[in-house]
Length: 186
Image (cartoon, rainbow, N blue to C red; front, side):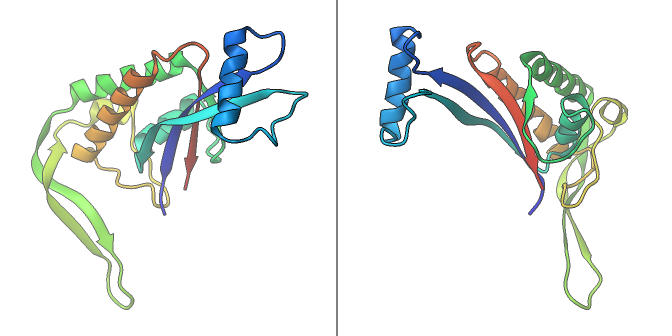
């Protein structure tokens, strides 16, 4: 249970007669690969390939960015098209926050244990905490939510941002035949 976030790359593949031989062969290869010859439509020979290219768990600041910048403020666990320009903007924002963060040794939130009849037990462990949160709060603020994870500006927050930079760096150069979508579930 919690906030899970997915970035997918999608490619439409057509097997129509008017397509180039290479494109039709790619479609036939897909149909054969998935042993779908008996169910593939002869009238509309086409497929969409979807690959998960990015995954985050409880990276609530990244989720908030997608909700605000891609989903028009609607947080409804549906698929949303994400342009390459939006991905690059997210990368630039993450990098700006990472460049501004100064981490120092401190106590990092490690979870809360709930037991019937007892007060919740909040646990902290040694880690790295931000000494300056101003840029992070301005550009990529953490977001509270039901099982959305911690809202502290610490090593976990910084790692989510670095993971995002790495994901965008990996996928942004995929060929133009690939489109991207973001989806969350919670």
